[in-house]
Image 1 (cartoon, helix red, strand yellow):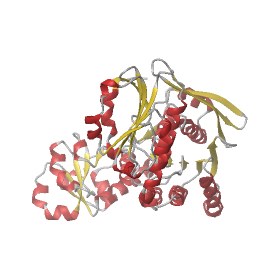
Image 2: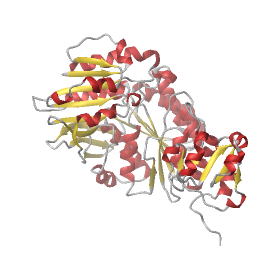
Image 3: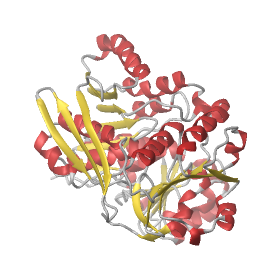
Image 4: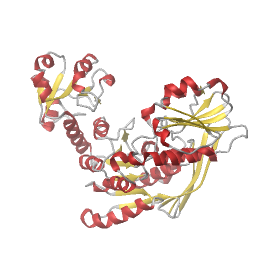
Length: 481
């Protein structure tokens, strides 16, 4: 009787990737499904994939990964040949390949084919991670569901997510990121998506995508998946809706029928209505809305902050229904939705205030939503509305214009603090602006945290600036709700 293994043996992995392996007797050893590309993350038993990076070469950390307990190392043949004596002396299995990142992608595709789940691919300028988490929550009690624990949205990140997938997975959820034309096309070519979601097409990564038209074109690449059956998209974005209509005419005759369902505030397949945002005295947020689909109409209440999440929840609903979940399943799951850290988590701030942690990342669309939430939230009269905004990266030639727009929108706040060289090009003057600092360290040295009035404080900026380091200075007590 043939034994069904939970994952590939070393010999199988070598056959899939065209690799040699050492020692020769290790062929029947079963590989770990924990693949790491950063030696600092390696734990005993993990597989370390050594690959060149923009700043450093992972091959330089092979010895460190082995010392941390790596059971197998995947490395380039060129490096192995140059350092054969040292590599052969390490107490681990060596899988020697022509290209380590390419080998990991091949392994991931082979495992995806073997497990054969339905694959949800989520792309968009904003909302990928929160939509992923909402959908995972909606499906986890209905299907055996697997998704990344972090925002793994590149070829390497998606590969690690797939390789960690249990053999009995029924639904796999991937995030698909892009900073250049062709990125998503390559992702769906390697990891074909069956159910796609495009949350938004807004100014982001303009260094590589150049324009809003470029952003739309990049998101549309998800439709090139050979396995696409269903697509949900933001119908409130006219450019995106028009592009989908054009592309559907081009691909439908070749690909067969692709079911689409629009999501938005207008007349959509899933329509969002009556959105209300509130925060309790104990700093517990509540987002209430109604969702309509055909003759179905029901209310949703979720403990999340930010009106923009209404659309993310609606996307999760649209996809869950297409995958076979029931309305009742979705409604039951809404109450357990959790926002990932850095994306709108509310904390108790010093001085009896509220801290809005949106420190994970930033672009013009997400900052605009955050400012609108801050201005519209009903608060006691004594509350001051304060924003600490980091610069928005990767906006290319449009950077100065977008920073000027955001700075103008933020002028309605009581206090505004800016961090990053990008703001120096803006010209708008306002009573709210209290200063511009080059770095978080400079801000920490100059800000008087002890004199902070009762406030709601938004912290948001590109990860480059590390605004999450400010949280400990403002936070009074973490709210676990």
